[in-house]
Length: 463
Image: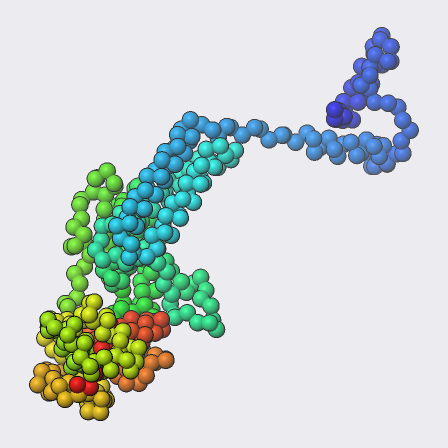
């Protein structure tokens, strides 16, 4: 066993007791043995080197030993851990159900992983020997309320496209990686991306940090790369439980941030109508902007045949068979139209105005004259030419349209004639009809989201 600890005072007391005792010396087995020691002289007393060392050791040993911490396995905390585990499993089941019913919503798997991580922590806390165990359990409960509110929000609001989606202040680049300050995470993206919703689950008064967080999210939303069609920035909303202070509500309102209050899950708050809770959507676009691929689709003999009830007979025509063998795209076009007709004319019926850029119409007329057939040229002259208006980009634009024009013209890897069509649609608030899905995707990757209707490419036949 470990050797006992001695002090100078203890040794002197033992020697005095031995001197005044009638017992023999060997009766005091714990007395220090008498050894020859070197002396260390000081101004007040003379101590041996060993006595000096033991005095230093005695100072350290006489410090008060830490008391045993109170047991962290209190019945209340353990019961809360069990409840947390049960709540995590219940929430996980709800997330799986939501994912099955709405598979198009991005990021649901991220929310589920976060819940499962909290479950693992709750499982460890059941047997943890940690004095901060109760504080950790409280943190888990707060996190779980936040996850539940995110799922409620995603289930509640219309046209949700993503949860826990990340946005940046600039398009990604291979030469400059995005830093943490350039990236934010949005809890719920609703109305097709037009609304960014921040969720806050609070039991009592909402923390004042919510205002700064919402204002920071608004700065990210106003970054040019996050603009919605026509250069409109996403609108930031706050969906929360708890009481919002009067000053905080006024600051959020002045900044144009919509606050959506909801009571606890037990029904303590006023019910919200999911369709009317968010601000109303802008008026629908009534102008359709046609690029050259859309014009081809309108006059092509293939499109005309799909409008009839005899498309299979049309595909058996000798000229059509020869045309389909010229290029794989032609054969693919016929097969796709046979299975699912595009009917672009029906999609355009809801628009009051059809427009096209002058450069688009010039290129279309040239190709129609050289590659189109007599029936296709006649179809253009009799059905569509009078309906499609030649429209140029206005010279005088407001600040929003001017900024959008600059963004579109700065796009890379897109031909100028295609940019003409995109520019007209974005500056004149018109939906662009195009079969050039690659160009639309390329623009989105560069931070310009276009209001475009991408349809199947339909080629001129020459008949």
